[in-house]
Length: 104
Image (cartoon, rainbow, N blue to C red; front, side):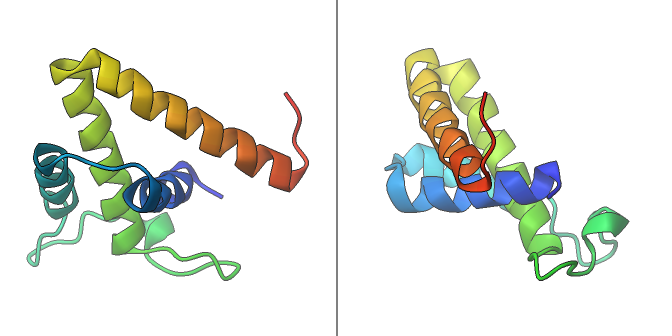
């Protein structure tokens, strides 16, 4: 699994389980839309098709850019909230590692 796919999975978990403020939702929306150009696709070629039944494509790329935008916004505007989000992400990554049998 690539970094973008992992970020997409994390992003979906955050949307479901980590309550976002209205401003954070706006940042996420702008982060997702920043990559959707009808003129030219900015999706890396490696994400343009599905492999091994793993969802790929523009949605994965947009999810990953939205997550990056949210982290960047929080880092600059509210470090405590950013740390909360990063702690939540760390917990999710630990759960993913346990499911795959990876120990640290």
